[in-house]
Length: 157
Image (tube, rainbow, N blue to C red; front, side, top):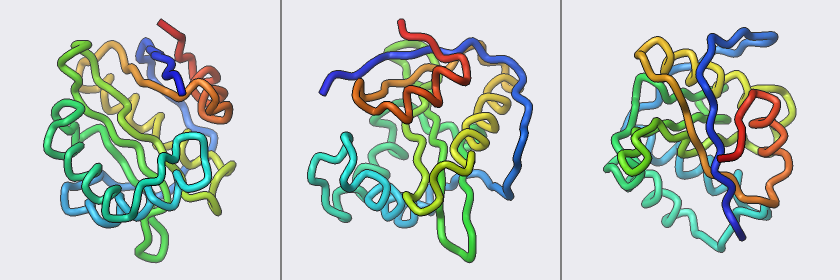
């Protein structure tokens, strides 16, 4: 399926709802991999990956496949010790811009605004560090993600 490239001019984000959150750390590999596996199964972005393959995908993200992992701009929400949502940002040298590598929320916790909240945290952190833009790639048929990004002000480019 085709990917759509989108970009956002960073502006200070306000919050309607908030959740306790923390920075993502490289030792979150297994919890992020498990979350990714649970989030993508049965969606347009699922390509048959196994749980082990999602652990590897998180590891290569931390190792720089999509650019340097921006720990200060990547956030997670967890409840009862379980990771339920995450916003992962890297510095993608190819486009000379920060990249929203992954934004995901466990299926049982969708439509509460958690991903939106974490993305806004990432935007504010990027802006505080002096970045001007954030870009991402989204699958063309991923309507819920497209709506979220367009509502936040991302534009296709």
